[in-house]
Amino acid sequence: MKIKKCTLALLSFLMLCSLVKAQKKKQESHPKLVVGIIVDQMRWDYLYRLYDRYGDNGFKRLLNEGFSFENCMVNYIPSFTAIGHSTVYTGSVPSIHGIAGNDFTEQATGRNIYCTEDPKVKTVGIDDPENKVGKMSPYNLKVTTVTDQLKYATNFRSKVIGVSLKDRGSILPAGHAADAAYWFDAKSGNWISSTYYMQSLPAWLSQYNAKKMPEKYLSRDWNPEYPISTYIQSPDIKLLGRYETGFKNYETPSFPMKTSEMIKTLGVGLIQYTPYGNTTTTDIAKLAIDNEKLGNNSSGDTDFLAVSYSSPDKMAHHYSINSILTEDSYIKLDKEIADLLNHLDSKIGKGNYLVFLSADHAGNPNAKFLNDHKMPADVWVFSPYAKKLNDHLKSKFGKDNLVRSFMNYQVNLNYDAIKESGLNIEELKQSCIDYLQTMDGVLYAVDMKKASQATVPHYIKEKIINGYNKDLSGEIQIILKAGWYDWDYPDPTKGGTHGTWGPDDAHIPFILMGWRIPHGRTTEEVYMTDIAPTISALLKIQMPSGAIGKPVDYKMK
Image (cartoon, rainbow, N blue to C red; front, top):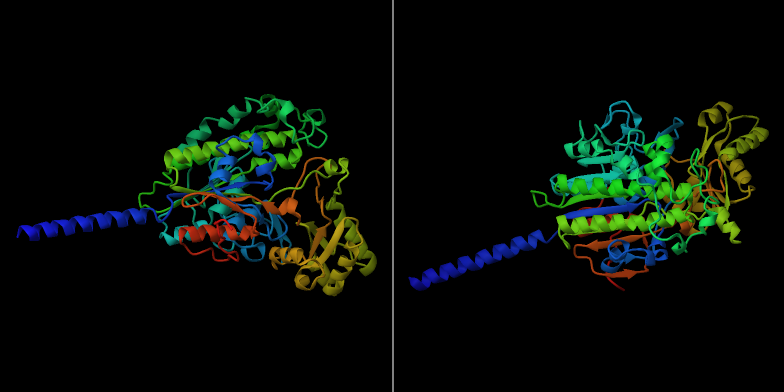
């Protein structure tokens, strides 16, 4: 009997050990939290061009602990913010996911659509419930996101939250089934949401808004992180203002930037054009982790925080990527990344969370800056060309206003006017293409519906096809010469932009770090569409419904 009892006790003990081991293994089978970090308009080369300027715990930590895909490319055009955020999180392209630009034209009606507009919802977080800044949702996104798939895989036990100054940078990554998406109202200085997600802001966010932190940050002014003489990656401080766009009453940007004075006339929306826009974004991300208990889900399931830093895009547009202001902004952003990672270490535990870093697109150098250094580039201001093209068509066909607009490097035709005129649309399109090809700066003009037959390099052809949505894209795609871009600011020689097909716009970072990710890097070409399938594979969930990418190998080759 004693032997029998001992045997039973030993078996019970072994079974208990086995259960504990199995439970531990189950707990380790997925990360507690996934954090997606998108830096709006971040070029891949920023990782290395400014490497010596960074601290050890931000971008350097991602590179030195994580796995970097050194050749991640955007595989569609045009390369704009809403499309990029949608593509990263869906693994799809505009042709399928339906976000054809930040704004795009519904071809059947001619109605212009903003990517996240939704008149059926109302603003949450400011006094005016009809304010359009909050009438937003993911309605126009026609496929699921990796965040949606995570919700589905856990029977909606996982929490998903999006955070960004821009509505599109928060809403589109968070997906359709998100618990919340928060974005910034530049007029009031509040972080807000919409009734798509909630009827009122959570107490923690209302408390943050009450502190007026954006105003407090701007009261500190924008001072350079290091002595000006050390900013050797940018034009000399004496040239500040040569490539940068200023502000009303502050035509020439200066360093230090007296934001404490500028806010009095420009308002709190100024924060978007300073590194403090990144600071308030980090604040909200950390508060969401703490107050929503992200990564400490009572069900034990993985949560997801989608963070997009929008200020780098605002600053690059305004100051250009060649500005000393932009260089300093990335040095400061590095500290924000470090702060967020340190917070995750503290709250979730190192190795218990998975992070990925990427961008929605990159950005072109200022054309004048390149010209000043004897390099080819130029600006192609689109707005006058719609009139020129209409004048050409009128001279040939005798009818006016046959072209509705130029948008997203595409020609939108006026179908009602064409139908009333009885014109052959194929003949009209060919006339447009022939005329566009005579214009300086135009490399190719391509009939979108016949792109597969066009005599253009396959690399560009694939981007045209992936970017073409038959209901929401124009009839003709305009491909400018390398280094050329559309820029319609008052002074087109200042500032900078994106949207084109070349590596300046298309080469973006993609780094995985944290849970079960080995250190390494590869130069094998991967695509923006591969990011969501890769995260899906790591989480062992189905990839998004419109995904065309594939999980990538994060092992050294």
